[in-house]
Length: 410
Image (tube, rainbow, N blue to C red):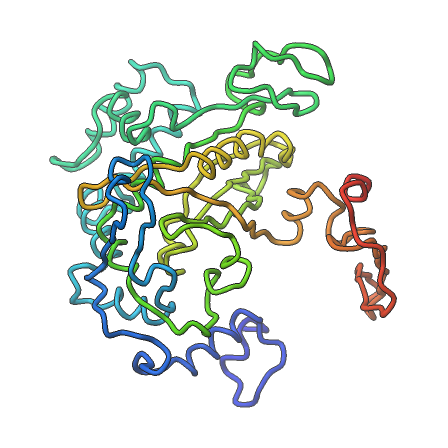
């Protein structure tokens, strides 16, 4: 076994236990056998989720007035939600429902949705024509059991992916030389740095465009799914801090009760061990739902793939436009036959240290002047192994706080 997970065999405490593992062990030890009645109000059933419209003029979706959602501002903690949804005998178990309904065929390794997404990815990768795609679908059908729910045409594949929106998926192009954003058409906009039209696309490399997926139809489908409606009715004590929605910054957003907020996240992935290609997905999740539901229902809004890290000024340009639209105009979703108008806000971005420095356009976390708050230059710490690390030690003398100009400079 070596040093890997040696703490599982030791009878004495070991200091070098990974932080996340230590937190999981502590949570398992402290997890109560029953939901604490003193901290949580469980008197109401989670099946009694209701929307109370105080202004009937808002039914058409133009103005919903003061929409009150019972228990909307608070949700169950993760342990309670897991206990409710991991019950093997529950017909409403979200994971069981999805696993049973979406399986491509008996004992298949992928679901119907994954099958269609893989076919779509293959189509984009090799620029298949309509005839070639239909031949591929027919070939795949011969390799699957009779009765498998496979799409039979390119139209059905696109219909599934579009989710009712003609602009669900868009390619956004950038200059090969300077990664300057060029919009949705590579041949109509001129690069501001090289003053030329975008160079012709390479047939298979796809190095000068990225995908943007409109999150509005995905959020609407998420809100209208019956499984999630039963979760928005569990109250918690007002002085209990266990999730994003319990924080002071969240409460000071000034949003109405029918609005939602999203947490954004991005990070780089190396899909191939022997290649320099990188994949940077940009995902969002709704903060108002329990953590376990958010984790299993992240919404992909953009995908960058190339041999270099994304230029985030280019990568975020179409996303900022989408987020501003959802924050100002909002979206319409249906609840029990009534149209509800909700605005979507994006107050928080969660990244690890390397990704955060790229998003903010500043020095990496291990470089000079890497503190995002002040102009502390940092120091070099040499270790006994004759290696060094960049650190920012605590000092009593306060350094100059950052401004817009210093962010650009460092």
